[in-house]
Image (tube, rainbow, N blue to C red; front, side, top):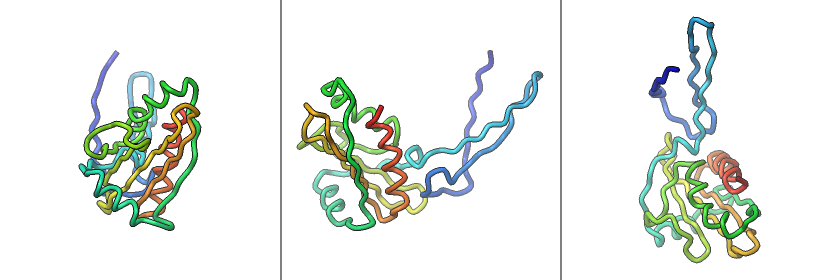
Length: 161
């Protein structure tokens, strides 16, 4: 058994999901194995400390194509899934909790990140008003509609798991 660490530095950043790719071959005495690495947009987000007041103001200003939403249903057991959802989301995207607290506040979870290329902020609001039924919504807001849709699709996986 052999353990190796590989660091990859891409020539340029991108705000598109799957746009960056590293391709190489692992070679051994048994042959060669091709490997492709495509980091998701969620993995490339940069930290962005922010308070609730600033977050809510910025999210309120983004409308139309700058905002995408989807509904979700938490899996059973609802109460455990509801409690674990904030940490689950952070496994799928490198978002920063608003006020640096990964907690539900007013039945909302507020998260923010900075896009790697444009350095624009991307905002995520997860609402689950009824923690008993598990029904909720996920809203992503940003000046880049493609980035909004990509991150929404990534986070839908987090709320389904």
